[in-house]
Length: 328
Image (tube, rainbow, N blue to C red; front, side):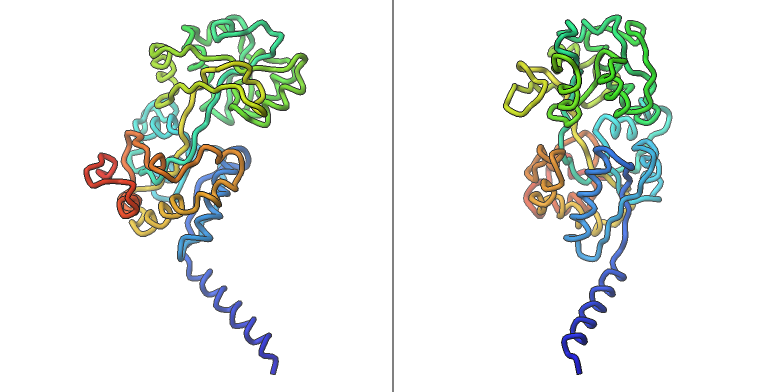
């Protein structure tokens, strides 16, 4: 009798049974880009470390497509930036007229930090200099970027009427249009690989320009891009395009769910986000700003799921008196 084969067969049977008995949950995602990369990392960590849970990406055309699906309880999880989540919960901006009040937070996961990128030889040194320049518009594949562009203009008291519109479908397309000389600036993140490509492609290289740093300018940005903040980024080796201390707009990315998801499920996912920082950060440079300390439960002005709150209280991250504990 081949005991080795029997043992291997028994192990395989147990493993199959464990997988078969696991609860499979979905997380809204996109085909490519940052959202796809982030959800792939979360899905892998949850599937490996949350007992009895397998998480699978559910690919859709964009965040605005899966927000209402999660709100309806037809999909378990989703991720988005805080401006888009705030609009969804309040029924404003991209979600105007429809409040998605069933959404509940699990964790604050990372920061994105962006500003306009221009050619070093363009003569553009501040946002006010964008008046009369060619700007990407449309963004059917990434509608949030209409808000970011219009918010950027608003910081210098400019409007879309002050620029020359050049229709673009999506985020990557507008980066390519900038490199091809079809538009005069692009919006990109500090440290983005695309900024490095821009720097290599455009004669003389590129630089990020600062947003006006005053509070009045931030309030004007908030009309288009709520819950965002200012953040000064200093030049450092390897950070292409930051040639001097530059004021960027920064915003959080969030993991969230439906209020009807079980407390046990929310607890398990929150625990993974808190205990698996090393693995999550191995998901790539997008995770550079992720921290499993108290920033994980940052007060975003919206309720956390009771199951996540239970875990965070047990882990000592939340106190009973904390407003974030008042999930509903």
